[in-house]
Image (cartoon, rainbow, N blue to C red; front, side, top):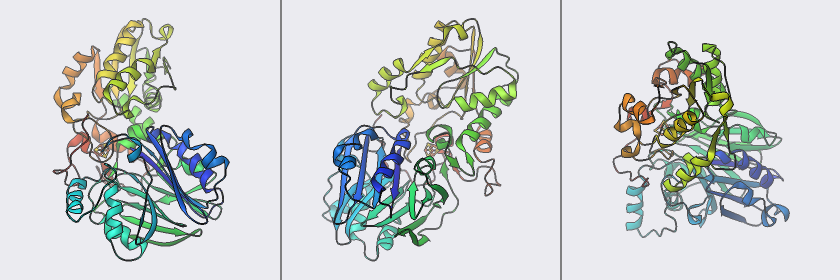
Length: 462
Ligand code: SF4
């Protein structure tokens, strides 16, 4: 997963981009980058680590003059986690200096790279995003045409922000897997992965960039907006609302927080025969669902796990050995609340099962009498090829075990997953477009129904 942002026609473009990136930090902690478009040239700065790395003398204190900028935070899904793959990628070609930041995975990357290599293309990075630079450089026409021509050759997930001098472009693949929204602040437009990055800098959400749309912005005006390829229907990643997006993000007409509360309400209905003393979340993504569960079940909500915020999100760290180490430090129980209680524990999902098992152990050590574990999504039985770092199928616990086998492995009293039908209802309750069941979402990691050809995709080894 990655976060992208762009702003144009603003004297404070650099500071606002940096502030927006801070708000998108949860979408990637491995690297950060920013391209500034100054009076004479475009410059790109990229670092490994957190967004705070770009708050340095060179970029902010010297106040490099720039009225347009794009930024990117990254976590690795398709290639090595290293500075060379940090974005934005800036290139110089027949069409001028162009910089690009990408969220998602291009699933026909290897096929296209082979073709480009045979034509003599030279690659500097191992990231899938680089093929877009080549395709754009080889394409003919205006800036919007070269973006459209290149995107038509791609399969998979790609939300993009592109900068050439003072022209800002936003684009979304025809399925709309990854979010991209448009905002406005004074006489400037902003593009961002999520709405809070617009609001935090004083801007207002205008609308979503539609699946298959390319939008061209210059001097505070939308110069052009068109559909480069008509979508059959919208297939936005449903896992954004389960786990990845911020709770204050607006998606499908409601905040993610509201959707998560609904997930908890539906879970409570699914588990109405279970009586317990308290319902407690795994912080942070379990909070809203636990509130919803408590409201419907009348079981008291308790906050009995303390999260260490100085440890990164274990799910988005690229290496298994780091994941194990981080999880041990991450959550501590409040024994006085848990001791002697029958508890309902709410989390967003189970991936490998190792973190959940460790957590169940911690709760038993803290004196839990019974543990009922509830997840606000269905069992994850397939890998994601569209930009979320789920491991390969053999490492997904639900792909290889029945629910009863997982319950025994976790050594808990009951295990409940939110049904797909209830998840879809929870994520689309306020969407005026969504009248049909299973509309508007990719659900492939739960169903195996992939929406693009993935036969030639080689995922990152987990
Ligand atoms: Fe999201 Fe799952 Fe689809 Fe990936 S496969 S885009 S995680 S719903």
